[in-house]
Image (cartoon, rainbow, N blue to C red; front, side, top):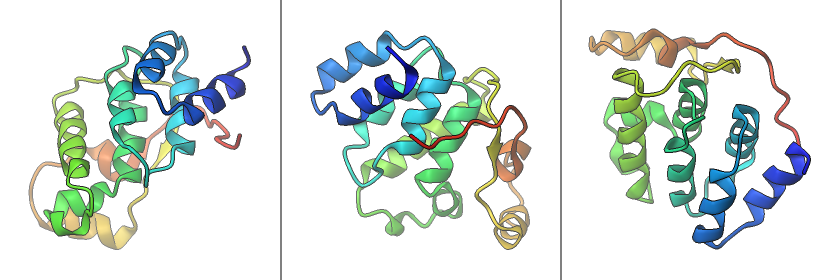
Length: 146
């Protein structure tokens, strides 16, 4: 099955047991990345736990999820910005993993989603945010369009 077909199948799967089985069979960082980039973040984010717990979930993919879930508000402690209170829990899991290097280094480029002003504000808070969270990760560009 072609990568795009696998990703579309993952995105359309509502049954979490079936999703778990399909994701466990994924053998490529790129497929996980495409799923993350095309995932509907207004839907059940429990699906993202299958991604971050996958052996191929790299630091790059975890960081992309962090950005897309509004990691900036999380870092500022603005937890009221999240209508779904499971989002800060997932962000905490990802942030902890990023800080403690639980995720392996991947090959995919992740550009920072933070503006220069946001980076300045985060640096002024004076806590040690890893550089790649602020500035992204260099790597190979992957077109995330399906």
